[in-house]
Image 1 (spheres, rainbow, N blue to C red):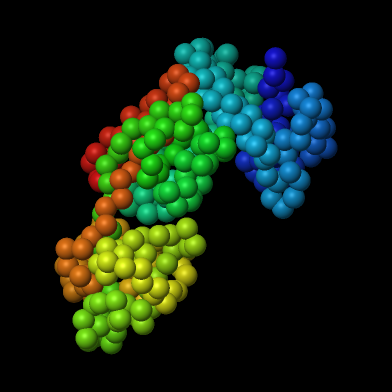
Image 2 (tube, one colour):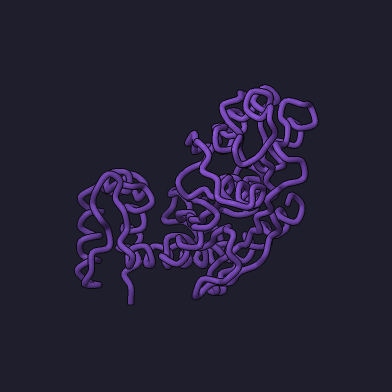
Length: 301
């Protein structure tokens, strides 16, 4: 049987990043948190927290934290059905701690439609959200490692222990400013000119530009790259003429209509399918989040 008081201390250290901030969140001293974590690690016979700045979970620690999140959601649903007196710590005390749901999502979904889903969920639920950002091809790994309870990603094959539902697709356009096109593509958009024109790349996991280049040129083209890990800055940099890049259609449709941006090759778009993966355990709060995510995706993707 797990000691959930000690497990809550482990989860708080991971969530907050340090023993000191975990102590503030739990209304105890840092030494008390440290003692709980140490005793729990001794009981399970494994290190759960890698001490550092910030503190990070081991693989087992991450799985136990995900379990704590799921239990917290179940307890929150149970508490909602009890009397007000049963959901307080003591007379005059605050209500029981709200569960925190950790989910992983790609940056472009967060910038275009996912915030609307989170806002709807927060309006209806007494819960907090902890959003991790990664490339859409890698968010499923957060689930596989037990770091999150749900994820938006580009792969439909369900992670073991999880369900997968298709949400729709996000369309990307290769765009640039008119001045950038005049300066770099006077001879047309082809493999030769693309080898010289600076492109914008989100991070080292971002393969959208490389995929588009292979589709258009029918060969691998190594374009010069600016690294810019921000969805909105990506759009701003494209408008400013820093480089050309693959931007989500919802963020650039108006800019294309106004003429501030143009497509490098009209009609040559990339479509990235999106899926929602979440724990198979029957957790009502997670099921409700899933319905909200699906509804929002149908409306916006």
